[in-house]
Image 1 (cartoon, chains in turn green, red):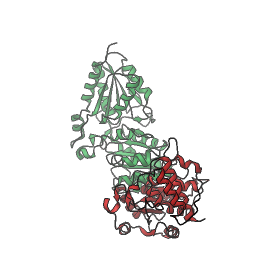
Image 2 (spheres, rainbow over the protein chains, first blue to last red):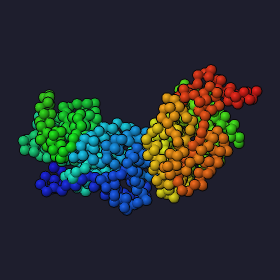
Image 3 (cartoon, helix red, strand yellow):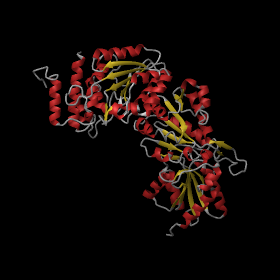
Image 4 (cartoon, each protein chain N blue to C red):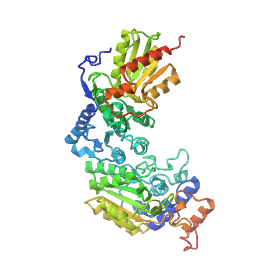
Length: 333
Length: 278
């Protein structure tokens, strides 16, 4: 375990904070520092956590009503006039419903618009499949000029919010609804385009070794799985691959070479998601056996977050099984 | 400057550009030549073609990007880029993309084409001007057919709510779209009542009368209460008799003989002038 993780990470009373809180706090910090920061929402001020910004900077807060297409277009116009707009809604609506506006008005123009997608993954829970964004990584990473980031916890979401403002061009980043474990600390390094190795396998290249490349709050489950597998003498390297685009090819390559087997973990459809992006890199450069944890081409449903992660195969148990399976597929050279 | 003559030259350039490109839209650009001429040569717009991105310029946003030949030709006439580039329309490596691309050319302020997006972009610009206490104005050039798009009504509602008096929308009311006449494809009337109900000031004009176009744009500048929409009634394909009022000319270019005929009509003002100059 690296030093830059929350020391209470594996304790029963690990702090639980929703990632979206980091967005709200990051925005307030940004707003105080720059007059150009503008925040837009589509009738979701409280649940996207932009309420505090709206109170502090009402002249730079824009309530668009339930009209996400117009909201994205307005953001494009604001950016063309030199503003740094943050478009805040649920990911199923933005970039879901307004993907065409993201493509044409924002991405093709290379405009400096930040898109914050809240309520992603099946862990949205009781609201059901309509509100569980499972396609947003795929539809944003496929657009030229886009930067796509999936922070793993509260601190990282805050850092991603600040980093998005510093990145010129359109940036998409996503949050989850529920409270999730605080994995990192303020000092944990975060840089868009660089993956962080959070856990190093104690054996490299040998038979009983694999790399887990994860993003979002499931990084926690990946770390728990790695720790438990260590007791079974299976070496696991865990990468926090928050930067979907641009992706840190060097780090992905290094862990694939070291472990010669990769499991990707994400709360998103496996088709077109982070795991697919990792596969695109490895298949071109260093093919190794892979397993992909995520939604397997199905919609979610109502339920409690934990139940849903269990049912749809994104639990610690399932990650451990995937690690064992991928290791069994290694070819002995 | 004789504005009617300038519009006529721009129409001729549109025909030449479309012939050379071998694809593109004829009716809309010809129909809007007078409005674009009035906007850029009628003394109503704050711009400097030698300093195309100067901070206090008025912004022109073209939402129905498919009529871009009229925008490109007008910008070239106004000196934004070399006139010779006009014949590169839709060709590989040209800045004159088939539908406009943000800042691909001096004077091109937005990406437009997929309908219904321009008014929202214009609103964003107008909001930014208000936040910064700037006096520049925003002009959203729109079509009537794109009012089928839900996004336009989201935008109309938003601009009405926010009293964006620095925003003027100009709707090309030419009554045609790809599949036929607007009132057959998806009835739009009563447009005046609809925009009024969304808290806009509405001015209806003859979109081929220079004095009316200029007066309407100037009047919109005096309205402080809310945004203004100018509904410009135009004849699609204006100036070329076999294109006028023909929905089938919405989305196709003239062939060589048709272009020759069209240019002859424009140069002789429909036969009124005997001696034709190239």
